[in-house]
Length: 241
Image (cartoon, rainbow, N blue to C red; front, top):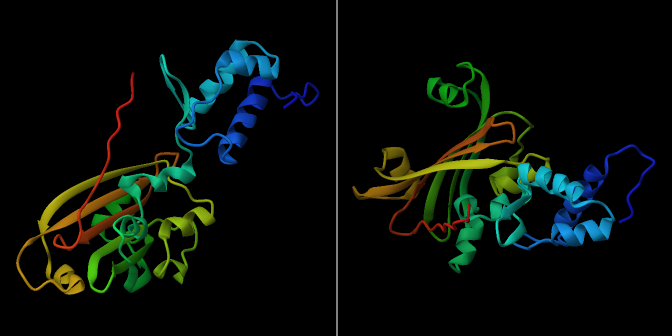
C-alpha cells in the first residue's frame, strides 16, 4: 500500500486501516503473527513510532494482542467471537459431537419486562423486550433456552429456526464480550416439561450476559440442559503478560 499524503489522514491511521482490512479479509487470520514493526516500517517507509501507534490502536480495539518476546498476534474481531467455546452456538456444539440438531419448539414475543428482567437490563419495569424461547435437540430435547433481548433492532421470526447470532451479525449487531455462569439446579416443572424429564435430578443451567462495545447489556439468556444428554465443554488458554 502506498500512503496518501494528500487526504490529510495521519499515516498511522492509514496503516491501522490497512492492517484491519487485511484481518477482515482473512489475509491475517486469528492466531497469525503479523510482520514485525521493523518490517512494517520498511514496507510503508515510515518510522517504527508510526507503526507502533497504528498497532497500539488495534490492540486497544481488540483486533491485535502483543506478546512480549513472541510478537503481535491477530486476536479476535467481533465476528469471530461466536467461534469461541464459551459462546459457541448449539448447532456448532452438536456438529463437533457428530450429532444432528434441530429446533423442536420455538416462540418469539415482544413483552413488557417484569422486575427481574428490568433489573438485569437496568431498564424501567414495563419497558418492552424481545423474549425468544426455544427447545432444541436431535431426536429428543436436549436444551431449553429462554432469551431476552433489548429492541436495538427488530427481531423477526427468522430466529425461530436459525442461529440468533447469525441473525444479529447480519444486521450489524455484534457483541464485544460475554459473561457466563454454569451451575447444577433442580429443574422446574416448566423445564422438566420442555425437556421431557420425568425424574427428580439436577440439571445443567447456563446463564449468559452479552454486552456490546459500549458495555451495554443486549442479551440475557438462561439455558437448561438435560444433563444425561449434554456435556458442557470449555477451553482456557493463558497469555504471557
